[in-house]
Image 1 (spheres, rainbow, N blue to C red):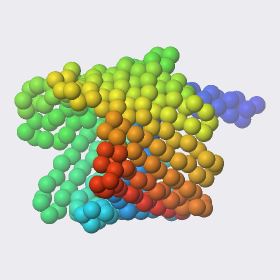
Image 2 (image 1 turned 180 degrees about the horizontal axis):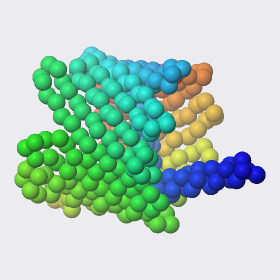
Image 3 (image 1 turned 60 degrees about the vertical axis):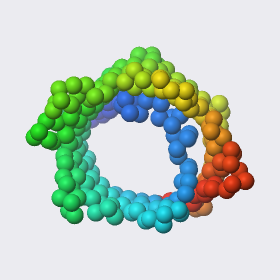
Image 4 (image 1 turned 180 degrees about the vertical axis):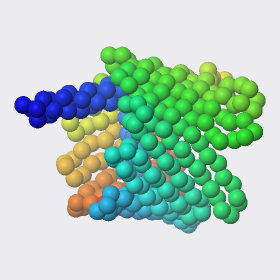
Length: 304
């Protein structure tokens, strides 16, 4: 009976934790992400790209990435290691790239308070001697998601903060940045949207000058469609694009997108075998089709 009671309360606690995390709205930076992914994921225009992910038996994750620019020939690579101590909610992340920049982050989650994440990160470039750090706080609970970070600068830090409120699918967010050196707000952004399992509407106003909106619609189990629109006050520059992803089968998918500048992007992704995925993409300039300058991209993802 004692074991039964213990298991019951363990189940209740885990269920409540899952409910809180499930209901927490996304961070401000993730609002409208479903539509953005339609236009960004699966495209590697002008690049030869290679990604390798692996995990040791001790739980250390390695992520190696590299790409070569087809026009300039410049090669860029990075190595990331991540180690988690689940009992203490601790995550240690270290990164290095071919620009010889070192990055370290230490994060603690759900220890002081359920839904609270504290992070301390630092960047160091040995060649130039440039270094900077940042302290981050994130909190998510039921219908609220709040994020804030402060860079470590003795002359006067820059404080970034954002909050998103969610209620029955409706989302409202605000993002701001305060420069303590100049004692003024440098960012003043608002967002409003509506989200369900298969439909996401997102609108935003940045500094009262840039207006944007997006729609994501999952029309079936195989087809996702996205629309993006942006406009800047004081100019006649309006951007419009529509894109889609279609799942051919469990291992293959195709993507397509087009914007009002007559740029057409096409992508094909194929899982060759477990842990190996090939991505092919091309960008065609419809206005200057005969002039050439079209781009292709090839990506290979390996996971073990």
